[in-house]
Structures are given as C-alpha cells and as structure tokens.
Length: 166
Image 1 (cartoon, rainbow, N blue to C red):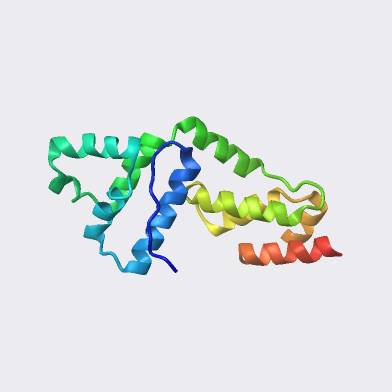
Image 2: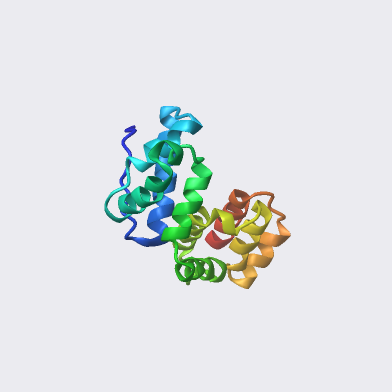
C-alpha cells in the first residue's frame, strides 16, 4: 500500500476536503507521523488556492510558528475556509432524509455509509446513527428491525438485508 499523499487544491467542495483529511490521516497512521509533524506534512500537499491561503496564514506569524498548530486546529481552519455552510447543510439534509428507493438496499446502504463517514461530526453516537439508518427504511421493514433490537449499525444492516431478501 502506498504512503503517497494526495494533493488538495480547495476547489471541489466539502466532500473533497473530507476525503483529503481521511487520506492524509491514513498516511499519518501508516507512516507513524508524530503530532508535531502532521501539519508540516499536510501543508506540503497543498496546491494552488490552498497553498496561497496557507502562505497568507503562515507569513505574518512566521512559518515555524504556523507549523506549531495542532492537526485538529489546522483542520478547523480548513473547514472554516473551504466548507461553505450551504454545502454542509445540503449534505446534512441528504443524510437525514435519505430513504431506500424500491428494493435497492445495496445502493441505500452504500450512500448511507458514505454520508455517515463524511459527516461523522453530525451524528453524535452509534445509537443515533442506527436511528437515522432505520428511519430511511420502508415502515414494515423498519418496524421489524426495531423489534429485533440491534445493538450496532452492522447488526441493523444485516437484519435489514435478511428481511428484504425474504
């Protein structure tokens, strides 16, 4: 598996930024980056608009000081700059209003998991995550899933698959 980073331009919206965060954190993990090296590494992957933004942030306080911010602080700065509230709101709305279409359970599960992964901060706990998942199912299936009292999202998905296959 490659430890190559992906570059971030800042031109493709919230999903692009969140995927960049996840891939960058994956590189951190595989390469055993320490906290004090994460921002320095991450900024080396910035290009075009984001590189200009970083330079304008770092220049007044000097680059050595800018590299001292934590990875969490750096992510917050990027979110503030590159995640327009309207786009985040659209994703939240889709997530909370997602429903299964016909018998396309796999499509529903895939989109639900993608949105849940992209919007981790929107769902406070696994119980709420299950509630949102079950809420998008047809009533008859949802009732049976609830009656089965799943303990995890994976259990709820397995129960749903079994019920829809009948």
